[in-house]
Each structure stands twice: as C-alpha cells, then as structure tokens.
Amino acid sequence: MKVKTPGRINIIGEHTDYNDGYVLPFAVSKFVELKLEYSDKFLIYSKNLNEIIEINEIKKTNSWADYIIGVIYVMTKKGYDIPPLRIDLDSTIPIGAGLSSSAALEVAASYGISEFLNLNIPKIEIVKISREAEVDFVGVRCGIMDQFASTFGKKDHAIFLDTLTLKYEYIPLKLREYEIFVIDSNVKHELSSSEYNKRREECEAVLKTLHKKSFRQVSFDDLRKLDGILLKRAKHVLEENERVLKVKKSLEINDFKMVGKLLYESHQSLRDLYEVSCEETDYIVDYLRENEGVLGARMVGGGFGGGVIVLGNRGSLEKIKEDLKEKYYEKFSKIPEFYSLETSDGVSIIL
Ligand code: GLA
Image (tube, rainbow, N blue to C red):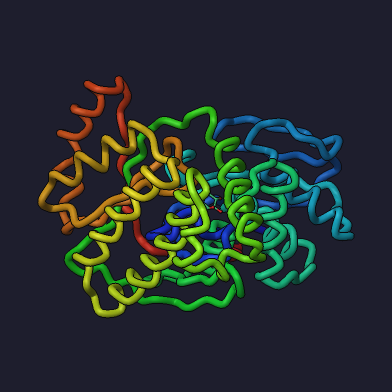
C-alpha cells in the first residue's frame, strides 16, 4: 500500500496555533510518499538518503526516522498492536524550507499504518497522533496546524482553522494573476527548537500573570497589565489573530493587495515582538519590499531560519530570482532556494 501526504505552507497566523488562535494554511503539492508492507523485521528506508534503519526498540535516533518511530511509539501507547513492517519513504518536500516535511511524514506514517492495518482511525485522531509524536517523542512542543493541514488540505483552498475548537472552514484560493512561492533562506539556526519551546513557556507565563486559562480570553485591555517580553509576545499573538481574520476576509473579496500588506505586518511583528526571525529572513523580506511585483512577504514556521512566503504578481518569482540569489550570496555566502507553490488535497492512499 502507498500513502501520499502533502507538506503545508501557512499564509498567516504564526505562533498562534499553540495559543488557541487562528491559522490559515494550505496543503502544497510537494509530497511524502510511504510504501508499507509486512516484513519479518521493522525496517524504514529513505530513498532520498539511501539509508535503511532497523528498529529494534522504540527509542530516539536523532534522525529523520524519529518522525516515524514517534508515530509507532504513540500508536503503541494508545493500545494499537503494530506488527513489524517495512516502510519505504520517498519525498519531494524540501527539508527546513518551512513546508513542514516532518509533519507530513508523521501524518503519512500514522494514516498509512492505520489504513494498512485496517484500524480505520478517524482523520482527526490521525492529526492528534501525529502531533503527539512530535511533542512527546521528537520533543518539539508544536501546535496542531501542520499535521492538520497535511491531513485536511483541499485543492484550490486554504483552511481557516480555529485551534481552540478545531472547527475549520475551506476558503477558496484562486490566485488568478498572482502567485505564491517560498524562498528558503537555507539557514537553520541551532537554537530553533529550544527557542520555540521557550516561546511557549513565555506564552504560558502571560496566561499565568493574567490568571487566564486560554489566550482566547486575553483582550487588548489586558496588555496594560503586562510589560517587557511578556507584553511583546502577547501583543503579537492578539494582533496576529486579528490579521488572520483580516486576510480571510480579504481572500473572500479577492483583495490580494491587502493580503500582501498584512503579510509584511506579520513579518514585522514576528521580528520585533515575537523575536523569531533572523538576519537572513529579514534580509529577504527587506529585499522584497523594494520590489514592485511583490505584494507581501513574511517568514514562515517556527523561525530562526527556514522559509519566507511571498505573494507576488504572476511572473515575479522569475524576475527577482537571479538578482536576489546574487545579492544574498554576496552577503551570506549561501544560495537561497525558490519553490513555486500550488494547493493540494490532504493525505490519501494512492494504491
Ligand atoms: C511550527 C509548528 C507549528 C506552529 C509554527 C509557528 O511550524 O510546528 O505548530 O506553531 O511553528 O506558527
């Protein structure tokens, strides 16, 4: 059996998903494919790396395999009996570009195992198992957005998700004379997962200070009771949620100029208030600001490197590519990568 799972990009709503906020991602047409078959030993094989790993016990390997082993760990803990399997992995999702290859792998593993063994686990449970693998096994206390988008994505649509209730709505995404692409800065700063977990703790400290259980109960008025880092973090979360609602509305009336403006605002907030951007992604966004064909851009994902999502006039990517490559290389001695993005459906069995 083969299962195919898309990566995702988040249009807006960054660092809101673990704060009971709103997000607006879409599944992208870059995929992880897993082939599952019965075997006498538990084996996982990566075609991309030409590496095979035998799993004798459920423990961390600090490698790509942990996203699959983590799923097996969570499913076993939940009482599912998983016999030895051979799982072959093939992926076209670039790693570290902000397209969430890891969540796609987790969803592919949990959905694939569930369907292969006829466990018929509902999709929303697949999302939760996949996220738990990341939190409890891999050790990043991520929110639910990535796994949700890889599972529930829909072609020609973005997903407006309320992470408090898990209610969602498909928003038509017809780009017409525009395009969305991602620029991978090709840097991943060491501290990204520790700083990510630190942001979560800071947000928990906000709630504790305000004696609230959920960020959804925090109002702009409450900001007066905060200062320093906690004020900055809380302000980002509240304003970012507002921006998600505004982008949703703008997409509904095809006001892409407004979407672009809000992307730039989001970046500024992630840079100055949430402090998760870095010199390289700031440089890319500043470069794009000077470019007429670009409507808006911002860093995506956890931060400290990774990708920048760009909304531009159709053809803008081709126009800026070479020049940006050259300038970026001059400054950072690295070459950025460019990926055009199309929407896609969520996880599915392909044969
Ligand atoms: C990572 C996490 C997501 C989300 C983003 C930031 O991609 O996996 O759950 O928190 O960072 O918005």
